[in-house]
Length: 356
Ligand code: ADP
Ligand code: GN1
Ligand code: MG
Image (tube, rainbow, N blue to C red):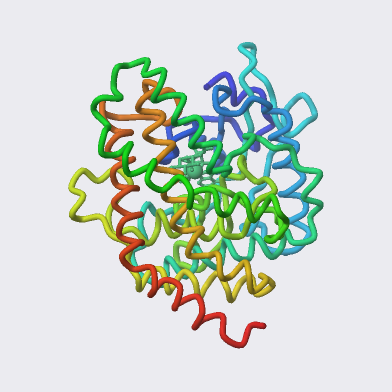
């Protein structure tokens, strides 16, 4: 990657380059230069993204659109020019690289430290969606086709179960039963999207707390990062994935399942922030937010379990059963949401009152 930085025009000479962050997908490095200016250098995971050029067209268009709506440079990711004249570059192995400004004086959290941190992440994602409301969604490339098409994730799960290339299917009987018992409900959002009952919006689709930067001093929302999955989608996806990750009482790969629950207080905090920052949702969209939380969690568990069955080819793992542990936490979270279902719906109804 020392070579990759040479593909870009930088202010100053690169003097350090270290692996950075906890993302599961891309290769991310923090680059320091002799002028003190810092950058995030990222190599796109070409096994995950079949069309990196299309993906970069999305990122360029979305960041340019967002940049026109704010005067604060830290509110939008900024791409730096490559020596080829574009905003990304290919190395001699065909890997696509990009160089963002490092968002200085910011923090990126793996879990909220206070309710206000989580509220601010809701403001960040809600604002992101609101600012992109007039972006021409049809012009975006689908960087990962069927990304939140839950029935399609089920089809892939069944195929992995049948192929059983690692002989692991026998280890995941209870998890498989859990998944298959929810197959009918798992398709509800997709059917509502297909029938036009819910509007298609420009969504982020990967709204984990660690894809938001907060100001280190004020701890207010700065910007949303990790724009690789920005595509047409449903509001419930962005709301739901945030709840899945940030309202959980334990990390995504916690082994002690008794520690994993959905915190209703955190859920309410996020809902308040999201609805305030993005008040234009339809009544039907607001009603589907709890289902978004449940289905994004179920879908993510299905994806982890599928990857486990397929031999851990997609998500980065740091121990042999990492994906299985991740799948189990997601299913525990789904079960907990089911036990809190009435309260989840009541929170949305209460906070939506008077919104029309
Ligand atoms: P992945 O797709 O692998 O999750 P991300 O784009 O989310 O990749 O980057 C991984 C991590 O790097 C983020 O969680 C964040 O901590 C850090 N990061 C990414 N971009 C920036 C940036 N422009 N400024 C500061 N930190 C960043
Ligand atoms: C991946 O890229 P990252 O680490 O923010 C994944 C998400 C999953 C998440 C689970 C492109 O997110 O869809 O929900 O891991 N991103 C992609 O932690 O597949
Ligand atoms: Mg990320």
